[in-house]
Length: 115
Image 1 (tube, helix red, strand yellow):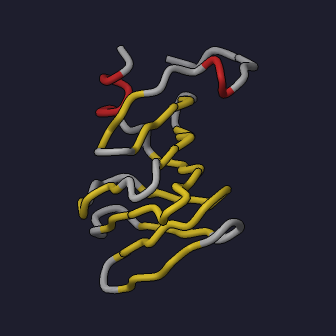
Image 2 (cartoon, rainbow, N blue to C red; image 1 turned 180 degrees about the vertical axis):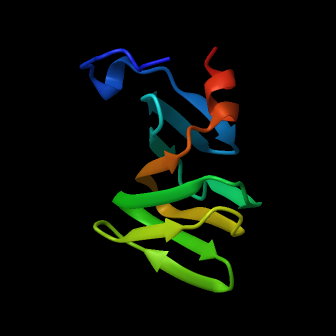
Image 3 (cartoon, rainbow, N blue to C red; image 1 turned 90 degrees about the vertical axis):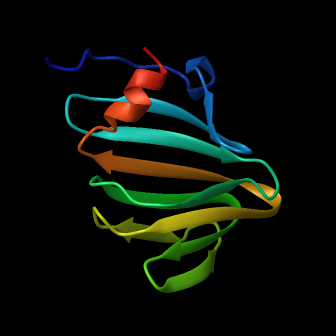
């Protein structure tokens, strides 16, 4: 089913907590999903993996990311690419963090949260 053409404000999108202190606001097209991800201070997405390719951009704050065997603290303007099937996690610093994530294909599990 083709995605519906839309223009909206991020403020108008509903948010849901997906992990302790981590809220997402997804925007889905037909094949690609954008997630606006807010981390409270020390909010954390535990180590996990999925078949989706994931790209991200740190907008605000700091995020300690583990991707496979690599661990780094990312800051505004830093980006990451996570191939499908690679374990990864993220923990915000003392000020929290704001991240944009892009997924291909769509995260059906996230779509179900908002159905």
